[in-house]
Length: 483
Image (tube, rainbow, N blue to C red):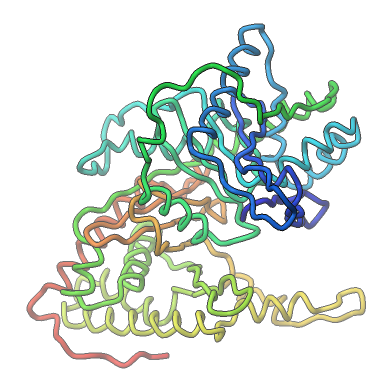
């Protein structure tokens, strides 16, 4: 995910190749401030082509960042304003492809700037303001130790809002974002790698902490060199396209109903030691119950399973909605059902889910296989498969509940991704020993969804499951899966 970027192209984007080792761009960090882009050297120039470049000291890097900040302050003081090209990369991919092609055709400098951005190690966005959400009049859930407003304000800063959406280059796989309050976060572009990879990198940074001794004393204002402006040559057409892309991005942002849920009732320790279930399958069953209680129906559910044990392995789909998970949910909402019946159904559902997880992780899933078969069809030669035109098959892949758990990131305030469907939810979760953190996104424009309502339903479902697993008459017998 380092030293690369996603390149927009009509109908299908591509990932650029890493720069050659002797490229000066490969030793640079991309910085964005007030919608301007800069590059600073963060690796020493090697003495010979065979030497491995050495990372500069924290103080050397900080001195260069400070020089960039001072340059930005001087530009702002003279009334200069940046051309917000970054927002073009947030636009519809085909629209960005057209604008990128036109932008690069305007001047050779634009191609040089663009190549430096793609080849840079990673990106650092320094936002100029701290986003704050006003307190809710009637909060549905209040976490302990931090306000809900603080959690969601941080989430919205990382997700972007109207003042910082252009202060990113969204095609970089890994961007660290810092606001004036020193709160930090990261965004990842999903194409080159899955979320676990940037999560591991981010968590490593948190665990390592800051070596305060490296910043002893104050940084002086002497320009150390080793930095450059990455400016664009543009015309009125590009400026108009930036304005239009910004308007479209704000429309998406304003429709995003996203929030972080800290469930602090219990975590993986209780689920494993007392409930005696695998935490991921247990959480997935909670999401099934929460969805049903808010919608009164079932939906195809996507869960990510990693296939990293294979070379070039990425993910496989785990279909959480099964006959057994459905049967358990119906037992839970049936007032005539007993605790014994509900617990037996939960055992059966979790056993099925755990088995499907192992099958997906070891290459025995179905969805990537079916995708491969579909991509191999040659419609121009009259090839077709009735299965792929089947209405039920199509509905089975409408992932209105799109979910994914992260095994790294317990120290994060939260994580998240967008809903795949206008009337669905995108849910990412972090299961820690004593709590579970959910990042939930839906759309304000849909009358069928409400992130606050689903959050409360998840909380209620998790507490209902604890009562069920703790009840004396739930039974201890194991139940055979239906699948």
